[in-house]
Image (cartoon, rainbow, N blue to C red; front, side):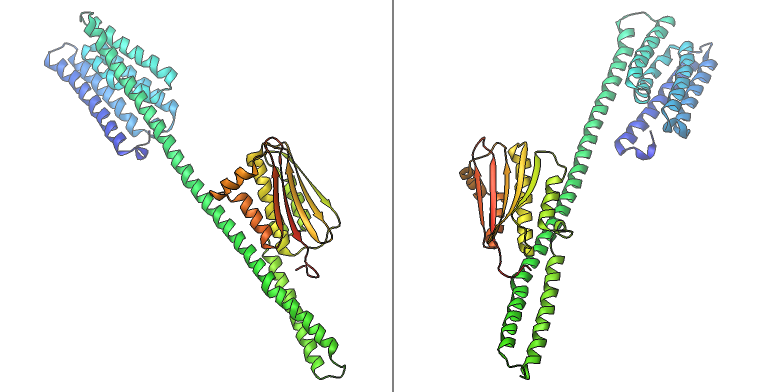
Length: 394
């Protein structure tokens, strides 16, 4: 493991493992010298060798970088430990830090057999050096192995849980950022639509009225009237500014309407790949140019109605129909989903729902009507009807 990636708690545990290994190796060497063991020099050499191999693991970068290098280093460390274990029974205490290294460096399918083998070798070494094969000789190494396994597995479980919580927090932060961006985008679009509607309903309509009045005044003047030229200039200025106002309204329209008509935008909406029902779009009647606020309102109503169908209706088919009549234009969105009770939906809307009320408000803001027909198990049909304006398609 890269020391730079360790948390303070893990650094403390790592230091404790280093100190434990050094203390146990020193204990084996000191006891051999103090007991005038004939193999004392060999024991000291084996302890130093084991300590040197262990220390090499902290200084050789490849041991921390690759699992293969770590396994080779662990094999060399266990080999030097076996030499020490052959020379002195005190070498069996070194098995305890080896348990942790094996569990940390090896895959689980290899680490558990390695721990069991290490515990078995420690027990055999104790018996080989003349110790009685009693419960203590067996339970000691096995209990140490069990404690090591439980500790490592518990830490790994806590680490996985901590990582899961960290990922959830990161996802939450990312989702909040995406939601904030979506809300900003929606707010921008809503403000663009509001400005387009305001420009159309005030500035564009006012300039159109001025142009009509000037045209009427121009017709009442005699041909040689000195005011005729000024009225003509004023009418031309009003016409130019009306065209500019209409360009502003078009520029503020939704992106879906930038490259085509309302019918084209609804056709693209029906073809958009999404989970849910198959959507078909059709046009009835003779299409006529619509004011931008009309197109925006009908497009938004269609998008909202289709979104409700996808989220709530469980429908297999849906149909969007745009109908042009002599004095009005109607948008119908019909699905074969599970339907609902409109009265219950009205109560839910009063408690904070915004889907149907928002669609109804859009239609009414342009002098139109909005109706909903539905029943449980019989699908849903929503219809928005707007009166066609007379003589102005700005």
